Image 1 (spheres, rainbow, N blue to C red):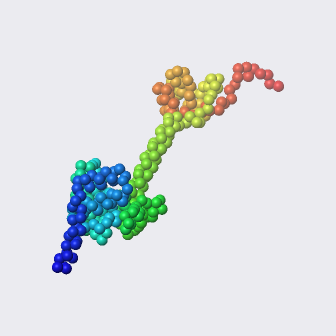
Image 2 (cartoon, rainbow, N blue to C red):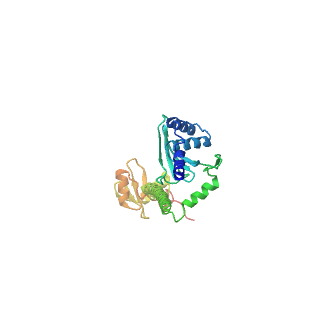
Image 3 (cartoon, rainbow, N blue to C red):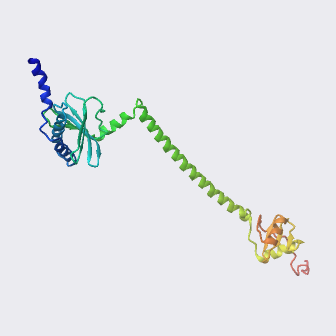
Length: 275
């Protein structure tokens, strides 16, 4: 007789929620979570729906909404002295209760906010992190004993380093190409910086001092060639070849400065009386 009473008491406790409508409880939980109802009120509804499905739940100590989908919520619920339960509720009254046998993973604040309750049913704490706690947790995750996080950080660093090297390489290539173009432009007139502008009178005097070696090409006693172009311009070159190129096609390559004018006897100088 005594043993029968002892066994019947837990069975009666499991049926305490049979008078509740599970669809209404599911709707109340869904609306309560989405409209910001007091967490303590949501916890009471969670305990009721768990008991309706004949699971044991003396009181809810913690719960967490870890998956939120359109019109559907997945909630992890921790009852005092029992493994985690899973409760899925929908806006249309759908409800499912499962777990209680260790198949659900532990509560993790990375999955969502965790509400914890005292023995009186009031909210004792939640898992919101302060800035210092967030920093400490990040450092803890990057400890060397966490191989996955370490490899992740190293891979990210390698990607960033490769990106920086790529950008630097492209920049250097563009810079060298720009310098190459400048050098090419300078090669067009490599002797331009050595040229000396000569007046028409000076050119006439140099031409008188020179010997004709080809059509429109003259050689000065200093070794400089004077070439007359198609437009009548006279230019100075150290090479007869480049002088001929200027005379024929107007190409001014390896142009040089005018030589120094030698002494020229002026008209009437010979008639000057000697004293």
